[in-house]
Image (cartoon, rainbow, N blue to C red; front, side, top):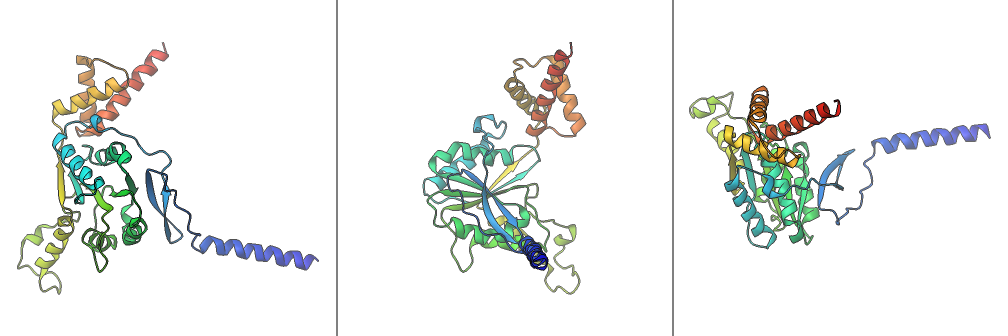
Length: 290
């Protein structure tokens, strides 16, 4: 009897080890959600619903009116079944690129828009993701945030396939919106401007440069974002101060906002938001300790 119990314990231990290394069973997708993340576990990917998506309204995004107008127009075309482009948002950090994409979900979810966030390292699964979404009635933005590649990364090729198609056609209910600090998504080098310079054994190094540029060219709509000037930064800071309950930006608060931006080495919407949180929280704590 003791030997039998010992055998059962060994079998259970072996099963537990096998479960740790085998791919998990595919989970059912919650299609009632508004947003999903592509999760990869033990070599198998699946769409995991985001229970509490970040709800942002377009009106809170300041100083990018032209970019906002363009991406809203393109997304309206998309959800209405008209031709629309993949979108690449590039430029200065903290200027609202990612926020603008997230705000589209709040604006167009009632029209069937949905969002699927994919990390850069999981872009190799993009063809599989598109096949999952292809026959759904909703319209999906596949969102890739802070995107950039090295030349050897496998996700680079997968993204090109989804953007331009391969032997299988692209899906009309899927577009890719990506943000990046790099215009062409890949590092560029001064030597690449010298078409006659030879690197290693490569006969036509200029072709490599063309290959790098070709990825960004597969996005039909490019939107550029620029660092805020002082007045634009203060305008955003004032908005967030009002959001947190401070109705007037005094000269003292303005000076504090400018000092905060100097310590961060940047003027952007993100820094303005962080200043407002810091200032309001600091003031509330000071009042509470009196």
